[in-house]
Length: 297
Image 1: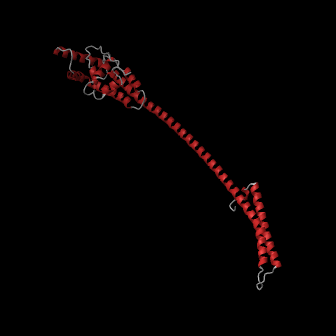
Image 2: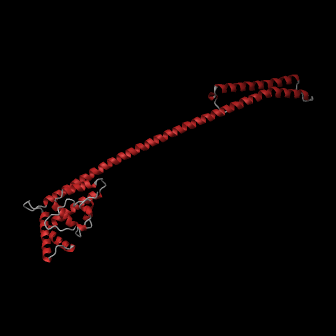
Image 3: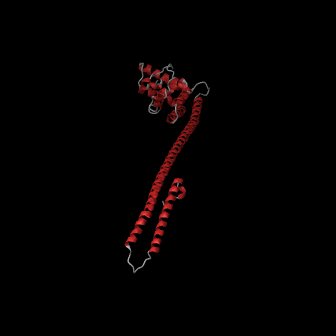
């Protein structure tokens, strides 16, 4: 009761408290009056003996009148305390409900925040993918332009004979002469590699940069993080003439090409459009995986 603010009490509780205080005051007043009257009628004297009957009557009166009133006051205060306790419990439950609602709102806000963060993350990933693709394509087309420039430079002085065509003509003639000399239809791989090395020696200053740049162009695509890599390797293949594809075909099975370039030729079907009807063409298809010529379904 002492800790409860009266302004927080309901009208009924205020009435109960007021009645209890009124009865408590009445009881106290009756007690004081009874003592006064007893003292007035029976003055206290240290020398006289106490009249036990009159003191007994006074006690009976006080316990009968004042005691009942104060007992009633105790009942009212107890009832009021129960109501206040129930009110406090109700307020605590309401506060708990509000806290739960606030917690639910906080969770919803956190969920919305997470969704917003996920959305921003997804947007950033898309932007990063776009930026990565732009950076890739800038480098890719620069390398492709270098390849086309190197291919254009591989013409003889009269601008009519491409170096690859000239090489294949001499290389095929050497293969044919070797077969005629040994009276054989087929040629061993070791013999092919030796003839190829001799034929390409005079073209090394042109072919080595050309093949190296082309290898790094395909490897650049292969090592990138972009999707649909074959779209770009197909674009590179479209720049290659049938004679250039034949050069890649032979170079891929040499000692220098078999470990690095050959796997890329097979992976990206770069020999798909190769013309095998070239004069004195030597078939080494058994050294390639079939995907070098035909893409898997």
